[in-house]
Image 1 (spheres, rainbow over the protein chains, first blue to last red):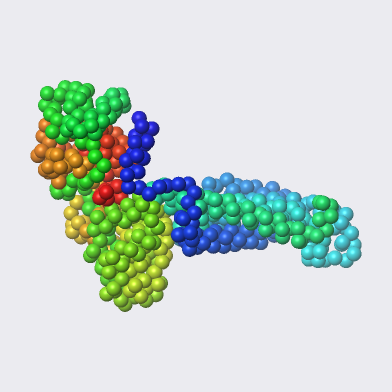
Image 2 (cartoon, chains in turn cyan, blue):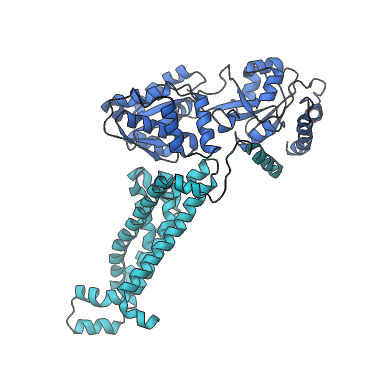
Length: 235
Length: 336
């Protein structure tokens, strides 16, 4: 009965309705400014979340490495946060920070931690103990040891974590529509609300995928630039 | 009910086909079959008000105010309203011209003709001359919008007119009332196109007591003190309303000769009316019980579809039901 009705209702609507294709370049051109506005918000939120996440994750990872008994709780807590559904997370934070981009940012940073802390810790632990020993023997202090010995050696693992966190954040930003700051997610839910406007939904969804791919490519390029010594072995 | 639906639908389809073939819309078969299934009022059941198929939907006027008055009313943060009286004055100038037909047209432009919200709103502001004669604005104003077409369009109209008055206005979409009304209270957003009866009941908070009614003025009177305690100020309600309404096809209205629900009750005393709506309709006071008690309407049967969605509208258009529940500003009500 449902199929009969919906097929018939589509026919009835077709009398006056504009076509509703999945892909419609004219939607993109005529709504370019809106799309670029949302894209900008999406990029800003993603970059801010990953940068802040990395800045918080690094000390946590260093702390976890220094004292073994802290590693369990730090990793456990970040994993626990990750299991909170994103919709619930924004609903929890919204009453405190209101319907601002900050609400979305807090959620995104918390989610990025699980990936970043784990990868940062794995990278730091992968630095061979004898290399650190040798550096210390050469008179490296803790700061110089980190910047000149550990960081370069752990960089591939760090970058791997940042790449995964970035791609996952690009996807998560869309949930921010609950407080009106969902970047391209605004197009997706907006399309659903506007009588299932397919071109708008697809533009938002494809935009997210392209943004994630582009961000991953850029980070891969950055990693290549930062680790010139790894190039020879890879080729 | 389910089993009956299964029998009835093919019959109604047959009836709709017959009607399409040029005979009068008398689905005597459908009505009679249904009457007997409903428990033997087949004798009483005539065929004057049986469903008539047609593309154009028209709403029958709720002349005894069964439905709560969900007129569009500007909600403004109290501090923002006090800081600059031009804010509320400007929004009231929109309420003064906004009609339900305007809403229907704008909803249809976005939902059916796939025009951009910004363009539809801008065209309306220009067409109505809302951007002239407003002044006194200063500072930035964020207009909130819920995540459905009508709210988006109205918020954009608000923002456009506020900009014309000299404010630096922008629109922010916020999901639902639980989230945006506290934000309006805190002043994170300053204005919102609200629905009179719904927002009154929301602020009042007690599900058991009903302070909103079908009377616009009485509802505004009830809302004013409630809003004051909540930190909001409301402007003038518009004529435009988005509330439950009952629609028939133009062909049905012409054939029976009705424009209001009272006229329908007078014309359709023979029990041949078929009602369509959401599953909760037979128990909700604003739906079937209200129609029966307030208007004295008598239904041969009730068919379950959705709440003012595509299923109910298609059922009316295809002549499966005589009358169905829709929303009064639905784009599908636009004249084709």
